[in-house]
Image (tube, rainbow, N blue to C red; front, side):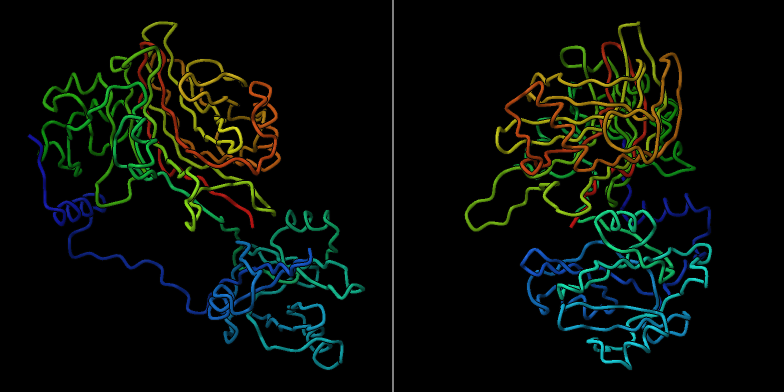
Length: 505
């Protein structure tokens, strides 16, 4: 029988089991620094083709801008860096803030000489006070270890009454601005941290196990789902809850054969009878954590015994986007990832562990790959972009194959040093022999720029010329990770923390 504990008991038991601490022990984590702040970058579109960058450190001013108090045309770029509040004594640099009403622009400096010169001379700059505190570079322009240099670049347009400075983190961003005609004025701040926040981010957090058609059905809610694609469904029998280290005592249906296939130890969902350990271990199943938490970590066993038709079968954690055009007066919930004008790219990230891979014969295979599906809103045709991550067959690229059901054109490459498109920021292809475990743990990070996607569209149009050549016509349909088999193979794997982020402003 399945044991069901009250929610409070499950959480308490799990917490104690994982921590190894007695119930009266408490751990106090790092406390927030009351002086630490983020300085965030905003962009103001002036309406005549000009744009100015601006730094905001005060939370009240951020809310004021985002509420429209400063007028239309303002938006956050997503760039920010760590500093200290204006009244703090934690940093040697006190950043003076100035405003020039002529070019409608601000200027920030931690240089005492620059600050004094602008305050004491009538140069068209109005002093607005200390904006924030921050460490400053040494005399040779270097920042201390662990600090991020913030470079100041100048648009060089004072003759047009259009002066503006931008403050960018790292030499790469500085060089990009210089390539656009801006003037490098050197490192002026040493930030405690610097990052670039996504404009939109989507995490595959899925607990429901459904046939792929149901996962793709937007009337059922969209979002996260575990899709059974060519694999028999009805995985309604649960072996759980998993509460280490005394799991077997609480639930004798558990077997180490399950975790031996996937390397994962959480609750198991199967179409087989839970008491039949042999049947559960030889058929397909899904493992995931407690319902009380967002589920972003899964174990999968995909077996050729459960193929419903044809040679292919897969289990696919996925995120389904909303793809229907809005009605009159309604907001558009669709995601057009390439319509952001500046620094526009996609980041796909996930962590993967490949466990047992077995093949009955040379014609049987197992493989895994993330997939991002885009749809051309002009022709209605999709493009499926995949990156082979592990397989029992040799890696390679292909373009032009069409999905027999959706008609999507596949454009595929392989994680590695010689990718046809995209930038590999983490992870590498895993070659699996297919006779035993090919256990490998790796974090993967793929970046697709707008130029990458334009190249993908060009390749796909060779197979379907009806596809639009304009990247702005494409919306996101879904993203997933396909754990697949061909013929009589089986695979065990873990996947976690899969997300797709859209950057740009």
